[in-house]
Length: 382
Ligand code: COI
Image (tube, rainbow, N blue to C red; front, side, top):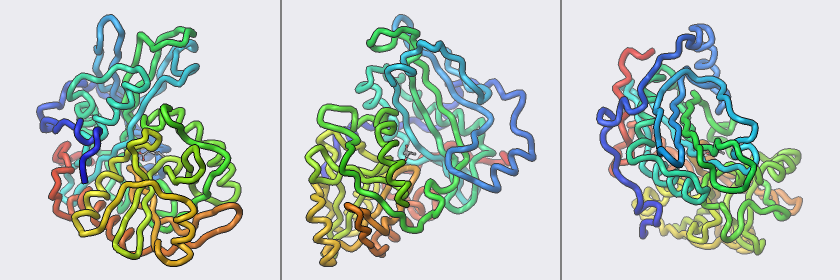
């Protein structure tokens, strides 16, 4: 399969020792107490608790990037007129740090997230980071907070780099002051049911993105747009929503993750991203490679809802799954369409992809692709 423009723009990062220290550490004078640390690490939830530090840098139109630092995690002070509050000028990423069985700490395809962060920044009229700074931020934060990288099955340190327009100005124009942060959250599974199948409600009345919009950027507005349909779907018992394109005919993506459909004839389909309305996921990209290498006929194409429903009814389509950094690989066990609940079995393709991908991320399956990136040895950090 031909690499996408985003995949072609990835740059292999230097090793972590070369990047470490770009965001110099001032240790948090009031880190979490031992009791709080133990409580958080023994009951891991997704994205609720945060580590002792954050990474920060400031950008101004006149001076570029400056003030790189790793410092105590805590509230940030902004002008109420900052552009982020009024016009949503921001972009973000989601990436994880994993602890391997020998205690060392690794991340997964950081160059993909780095390239996507730059792509999102360009779309949102935000500055790009200087080369290497994205991965350096991850390295410095994870090294400062290494003890927060959990070991429980299905757990990880979820890293959230983000950039916000902070210029105090109510005119609608790109901010001349911008701040970059990275925070970290020791996390369990995104769906509390773990690998168990989730139910997805199809949305007809709302769209996540349209042609020429910001659908291909990882920016808060896309997620804000998904909140109401997500809330309505949750009231009907669905864990996530599935959006259609603006014609109402083709599947695009879920509220915060990509989707795959498995056919009985060795085919695997996922919506094409070239139209700019679907966020191109790193997990999606990895799964396409893994399945193609396993001999599946992998296609990125339009998936028509009518064809999907016919195919599920006739057995032509046998599995569906959601994927993303947070969701990893989660079987879709039920699709709610126009008040009908259509059951979908969980099959061996979904399980196999989950096992191989998480095996690579955790260092238990050989990484033939150079996807894993070592952050540190992780010795004596707990
Ligand atoms: C991720 O998968 O990392 C995301 O940013 C999606 C969000 C729903 C948590």
